[in-house]
Picture 1: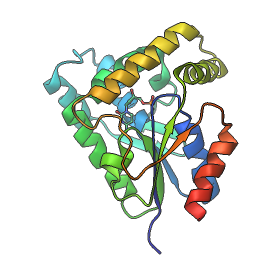
Picture 2 (picture 1 turned 180 degrees about the vertical axis):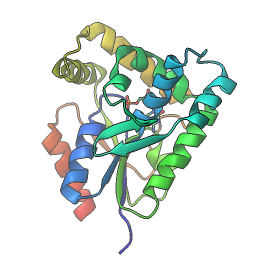
Picture 3 (picture 1 turned 60 degrees about the horizontal axis):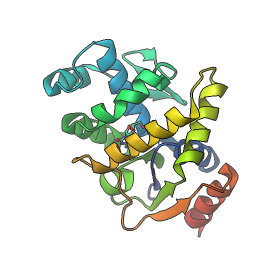
Length: 216
Ligand code: DC
């Protein structure tokens, strides 16, 4: 049986991760949160106190770090950093780090290695265009920025963090612009991706649309 590869791309807060995680459970396939990998590099770079614009220093950070996943936890150099990569500090700096060409090429290689030989659903920004250009199914999720900010705020409060809605809206718009305009693998809908506007849809409804397409 050939492996199933599902790409789910879209901007921050479009619902990708929640949806992709649940679909992975239902289809019993591997889920890979590629944003977590860029966050992990950012976390390590901040921890090392390097200048995030220093390409050589970023390269050294990437070359020395191991990233693996255990269930839904991300393990970096043997430590579970699942919580640490979600802080505001990492969120504010991750666009810059993920725009670095070397960081991207290394992460894409690692993501492709994980996808090799097994069925996966990956969420990110460039899965359908770059990481898995031959994916069996590609989806591109979009949603109104204010709705996306509300979701981020709810996620943060569920984890005991606080946040200001207007600041999150501004950060989301800033990241969208940055991610869509960077030179290497910008956030872009693959030509053959199915676009789903999740603004007025529940998670269950989005999952239904995707599963219907995959099962048809
Ligand atoms: O999905 P997220 O918010 O956790 O992603 C964090 C950042 O990583 C986001 O600003 C864009 C970047 N990213 C990327 O450039 N390519 C991916 N495949 C996934 C995330």
